Image 1 (cartoon, rainbow, N blue to C red):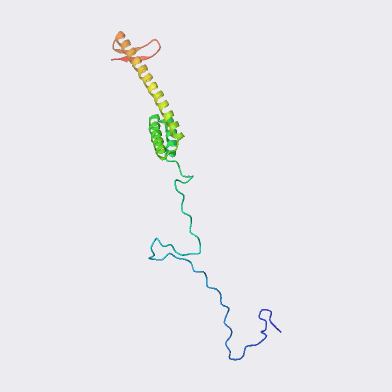
Image 2: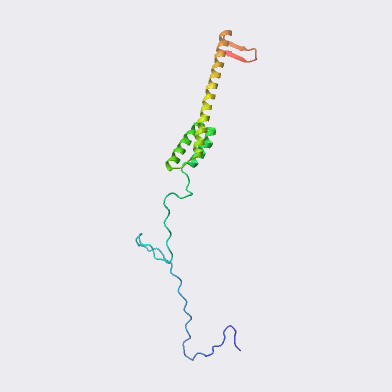
Length: 160
């Protein structure tokens, strides 16, 4: 009876002979490791082609210098117009030096300057109203004299 796992050899080995050597397998491929003291100019030889050199100029998806600062300036110009105006100018200068347009920075400059003018007008109006009110109080005190007085509208004024 023959074993299906180990079929009988057609010719049994002679007594005292050496069994045949196992079949030879190919050695695993050698991996190229960088030499320890190899000069940088000599690349390691391998079977693979080298990568192409990078293209000249800036890559297509490179960030525009000053764009992030332009967005920040745009947002800040709503709350602090002078700071937004300054940041917008800085962002626009950075972008122009790199040869790019920056709409965020331009919008921040426009909004910052408009809000700054509006702020100046409001401050001037409030100061003039406060000065007019102080002049009216001084005139009232000059007419009635020192002490605590109540006006016809129910306002209590203390004159020195």
